Image (cartoon, rainbow, N blue to C red; front, side, top):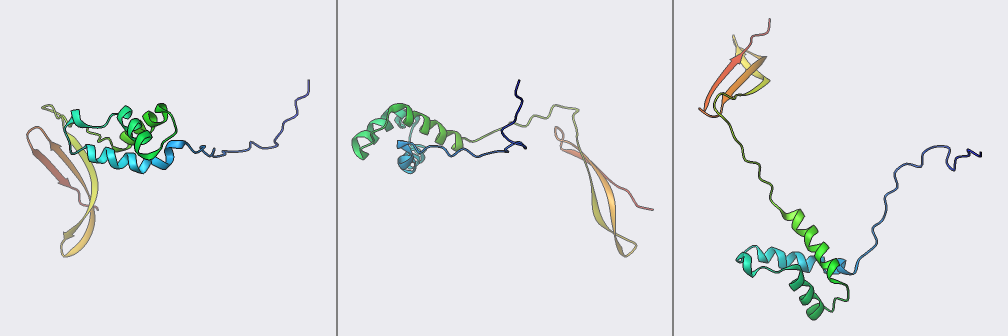
Length: 132
């Protein structure tokens, strides 16, 4: 059995150049249409099918519907807002530690501090510790 390796070291990461697609030259136009659609009612917004028809009729697009559908999905994914609701049930606290410059007997001293907040009741507790 011949166990010869083609490389003495691993070749490392090689970035693969994505082949250009027929839709790539139209991406700015599609993005502009989708941005304008944010101002209109949901039912009046362009679908991928309608964008495909407009590209074909108005801009001479010779590619297929799948390319338009994928491009629309990519553009919508980059524009999507992310929202994570904050929920603070009673009894849960948020705690943090840090350092602050404190005027201690006329000189600035770096002192550690502790902060605890109770978001449900908007109460908080701060404790500064003197360094010795």
